[in-house]
Length: 76
Image (cartoon, rainbow, N blue to C red; front, side):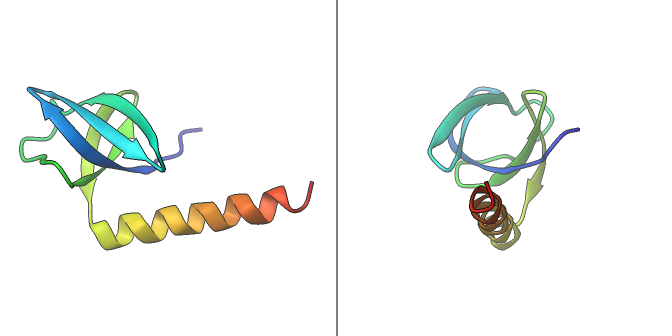
């Protein structure tokens, strides 16, 4: 199963970007997006940014995921 987590582009060098998810920074290929820019939120799969996502939706998704993880960790 694959979980798509919105990631914010914080740096771009040619077709490679650095993305941040809650402080975790990773490199990802931007080859599949022709209009990616710093500050955009993207969905990353297998090391490739495959689509852009609206900032409001990205932030809401991240908040929802944090809430789910917090609820789950309280049940252990």
